[in-house]
Amino acid sequence: MLICRVALGDHVSFAAVEGITDEGKVGVDTSVTLIEAHPFGDITLADRQVSANRVRFLPPMLPSKIVAVGKNYADHAVEMGGQVPAEPMLFFKPNTSVIGPGAPIVLPATSAQVEMEAELAIVIGRMCRHVPAESAADVILGYTVANDVTARDHQRSDGQWARAKGYDTFCPLGPWINTDLDPTNAVLWGAINGEQTQRANTSSMVNNVAELVEFVSGVMTLLPGDVILTGTPAGVTALADGDEVTVAVDGIGQLSNPVAADNGASPWR
Image (cartoon, rainbow, N blue to C red):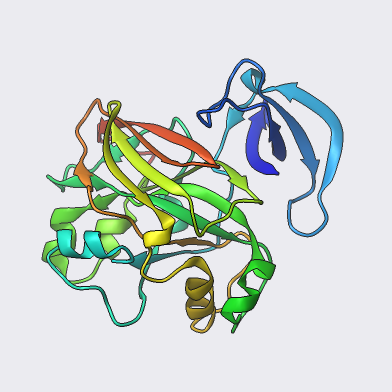
């Protein structure tokens, strides 16, 4: 099942998606069927199906926390001038960094080098801790696509990554969650203005999905809707005002966002 989160007028709901294109996008035949309540546990479909062109696709999940894994592809570790860590290297992105399909990635005026990172994201389906790798599938709702946007110059200068990874709009998620994906053999890629810059297979991960769930849940309790970003392959590329960035995982879909310079707009000004 493909699970999305949509706005239909003033109503926000989880929904099941049907009829996406072969490229993993919304097409003329795409429809959504609203889900009653939430997608955790038994899913009940409401008696309401609407065309996808009548809804606005939102981030498929608003997690309590986003746990990300650094240098989980060997070629990216080399690209960053380092080595693969002996254990998964974890960091957080705030949930205020989450945006959905089509929402702009805003380039902060403080950074001169903001880069995209295509990633497979794990969505947790129930509260759990100390999950053995062989039981990881039992606690996973499904998988979505993520863009771990990073202010690379801040990452180099700060000595820790909270600012570099934490700006508003720096975690696009979507367009939906696939509950049936095989995460051990999926192609992921990233492109800027239609030109592909990243391409890899999840089989190249240093630590696979099951191992990551075991490791992260051994550190902290995971809650329904929490997201684990599984790392990015080589090819991370800088973004510029006016770009269109797309990250995708075959079997899930394509997540596209425009890129815009910060215009200084704020409710506090």
